[in-house]
Length: 351
Image 1: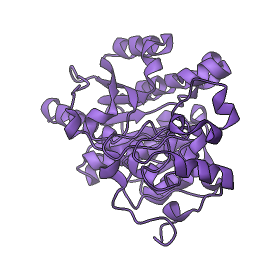
Image 2: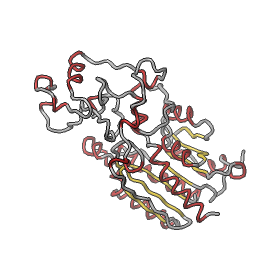
Image 3: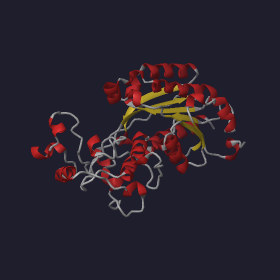
């Protein structure tokens, strides 16, 4: 067993619900050493290991992980961990998910309390939790916050748009920061439009898919002739299916006035829409390339999520599984921004 604090001068962090590693990547970019992580999904865990092989990953249901035993395995003592971070599964809090599938009582909603269980055991100096905006007004967050405050943590919660933090994507998320060493604040900023990262900034440098040598970029798509024709007629650089002549619109689209982003193109000079698990399907949102007659590639989706251009994803669950991993991930650049704030906080109060 290695004593991490004696052999690594970097601040230590643990990533609960680590997924494919977006949060871990952001923490590492900020300067943290992510010493531990927990993930239940086999393919997500495989992707995590491909990119973060030195992190002690616990694969399995987090409710079955003994935090005290895990702390011993990491060579940490109570109170030594600098940051406990995590993003519990958010499907049960999703606005669309709740409206369409009645997920208010989804058992995964209770996993937010795993953050509390690990916090009470590790007594980390700081805490970070990220999730969908709906959680900010949920009674579970109120309960979690109260119990953390009772345990001595100062807590701040805000809902932010990631476009103001270097992410080329319209994506609103909730972030909670906590510290038992003093007051901590979620830093809120607003960038002018010309300073926001755009689709062009993120993906314009890539060659056309097919011969790049990157399996995440070279996957070909199969479309019927009718769909290919429809896509080719959608105006370049931000066009929508609503711009099509009626004879080229699908019958199912004629019956609804909603979901207008479906079969829409991204615009070069704007941030992309929210990247979701359906990012490789034009029928799931505005996921068509700004000028090419195709959906964005999985690598383009990953870049819009601000993953490094060489980040690896396991194909064990197929290309749709990769799309889900990318869509469910936390943009590393967003996490990096707030993690740097925590590092600054720690440097001031924990010399």
